[in-house]
Each structure stands twice: as C-alpha cells, then as structure tokens.
Amino acid sequence: MVNKNEEEIAETEQIEEEIIDPPEIDSKYRMIILAAQRSKQLQRGAVSRTDIDIRKSKPTRVAMRELSEKKVNFEILEPMK
Image 1 (cartoon, rainbow, N blue to C red):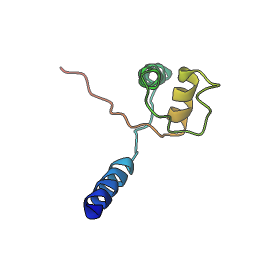
Image 2: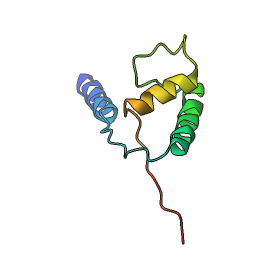
Image 3: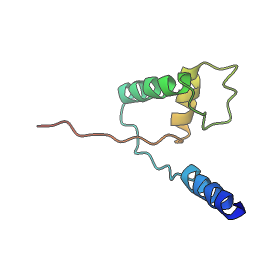
Image 4: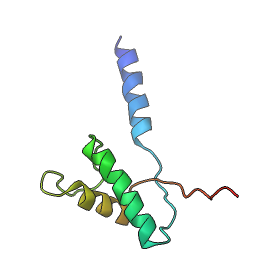
C-alpha cells in the first residue's frame, strides 16, 4: 500500500511540472483577451502561478501579472481561410 501512495505522489509531481513556454503576445488586444480568459479561470478557483496576494488583488491584476511573467500557456490559432 505504501508503494501505491508513493507512485501517486510521483505522478502528481510530474503533472505539476508543466513546461510553460508561451509565444510572444503580439498586440495589446490579444493581451486583454488572454487576461480576461485567465481572470475567469482564477475566479472559478484556479491557483495563481505568481507570488501576488490573490486576497488583496483583483483577478484581472493577477492575470496580467501572470502573463507579464510568462507563467501561463496559450496558443495563437490561425484563422480559417
């Protein structure tokens, strides 16, 4: 039983070590859209990836800080032609 718990802990640690390598944000409009989406995630209970105090800061401010520190993954999709 101890071995199974150790395996579960190891799997959890591997999941938490996600590689974060977002592309450059190419416009202020994209930054606003990304911050709004991340803010919604934070309001629904997502864990902040930055050291800012989420009890004293609005979710939008936390999202902007996370994006500026490049701690959130996202993809830029090309429009369909």
